[in-house]
Image (cartoon, rainbow, N blue to C red):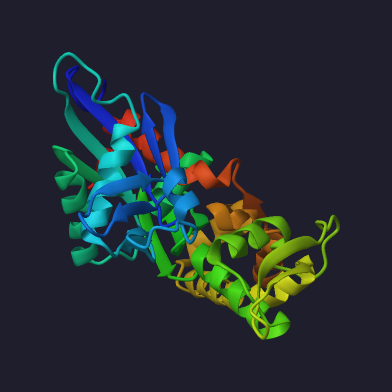
Length: 341
C-alpha cells in the first residue's frame, strides 16, 4: 500500500471550512458539508454533514444546535471538530475489517496556519481515532491535484479559494517559494450577499440562501458573455417582518462581491511582487491556476487575468482539486514524502 503495511488503513482528508472530502482507496467516499448538529442537553451528536445542514435554522427543537467547527480554514470548536472527523471516517468503510485497522491520515491545512492551529487539527484527528497524522499545505495539494509537476524546477502560481481562506502560492522544486493566505473566501462572499440584500433591498436572508444566490448568479465582473438567469431570492422583509421574494441578477452580486474580490486580487499581486525573477518569468509563460469553490465564480479568471496581464486557468473539478492532490500525495508517498509533515 505504499506508505503503510497491509493491516493499516490510509485516508486522505480535505477538512474544509464549508465542505469536507475524504478519499479512501483512491476514491472520494465522503463529500459532506462541515457542519454538526447536536443536542445541547446531553451534547449528543444528532447529525453531521447534509443531514445537519438541513436542520440549520429550521428545527423547532430549541435544544438542537448546528455548529460549523471550522472557521477561516482552521478549527474554531475543538470538541465539535473531533466529532466531525470521527463521523466522516465512520461514513467510509475504513473500519469494516475483521482486524481493527491502524488508521493513518493525511490532512491538508492552510499555508498560513499557526503552530497552535496546526496542533488543534492534529489533536482533533487523534481524538477521532487516527494513530498517525501527516499534513500537507493546501496550495501544494491543489497543485498536485491540478496535475502540475511540483517537483520540476519551474515556477507555478496556484490560487486556491475555499470556504475560509484564499491561498496564493508560488511553487517550484517541491517547495512553496512564497505564499499569501488571507481569510477572504466563500464564507465572506456569503456575508457580502447577506449585507447587500439587507442594505439594498431591505431584506434579511440566511447564509444558506446567500450561498444559493452566490452559486446561481455569483460573478466577479459586471459584464458576462453568457449571463445566468435572475435568481428568485426568498427571505424576510426588514420593515414588515413578512416573507418576501426578490429577483436578483449577476450584476448586483458582482457589485456586492467587488471589495472582497479586490482583496484577493491584491494578495495575488503582492505574491507576484515577492516572487524571484526567474520564477516570475516561468509564471509569465505558465500563467495562474485557480482551484477551490471560488474558482467557479463567473468571470473571476477574466478579472484576475485583466489585473495581472497573465493567463488564468481554472482547474478541472476545482472543488475537489485539493482533496485529489492530497490523495495522490498519500498514494505516492515515497515520491512526495518531503512535502508531507
